[in-house]
Image (tube, rainbow, N blue to C red; front, side, top):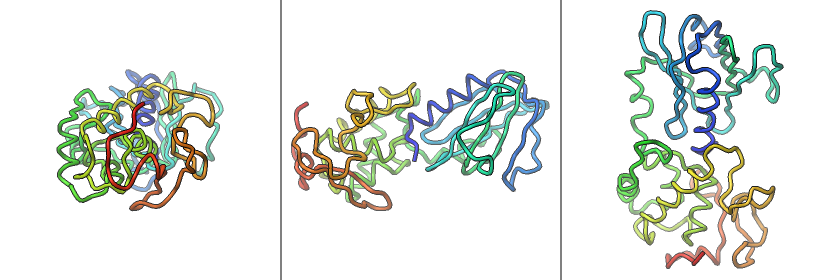
Length: 269
């Protein structure tokens, strides 16, 4: 599933391509919006909220509407120049096409594609916790929401978007490794929960604006993560083989030495 920084980047791609433009044609390929025509509407802005994309529009009647989409595991938006060949994804995955004089935006395999009055956006995203990349990021509120589920494993709690919005499986694994915390540790036993939340926000913010995600500081292929995607490879800190196992509905990667089952002080560095 795309992480919050990927969704943030996608929102900026759409913002640069469409903001201020009048839509000259739209093609929705989902049943609930099959007859919707946005021709003549104006794109006001493109924004993200956690892992949700919000394309805000003005109708010719001056009413404000939001086209909401969620990428989930495999969704994507692409922006092309008029006349440019669409590439990278098969045509049968296209869910929406928005045309403007300067760009064509194509949404592939989008989920939860919905058009709602902008005033009703909260019905779609109001349940989310503080957005790690939002202007209203509130670390204290994120810590409070995590602490409200003391017996839940920290690995599952970090992925619950109702606690904090934007952490996906990659950042979950990397943050817990860097803090020396086992993914199976109950939230109540996590040492320095505020420090863990602060690190998650710093990692997402550091990768904002680029498509290559790195927690190690390196952008070279094969060197961007400490544990994520590295099953059976040696830990970069202690040399122990990285493990992979299911936790809840997702897999997790961790080092059994650097992330002991019982909490302790995070490793230095």
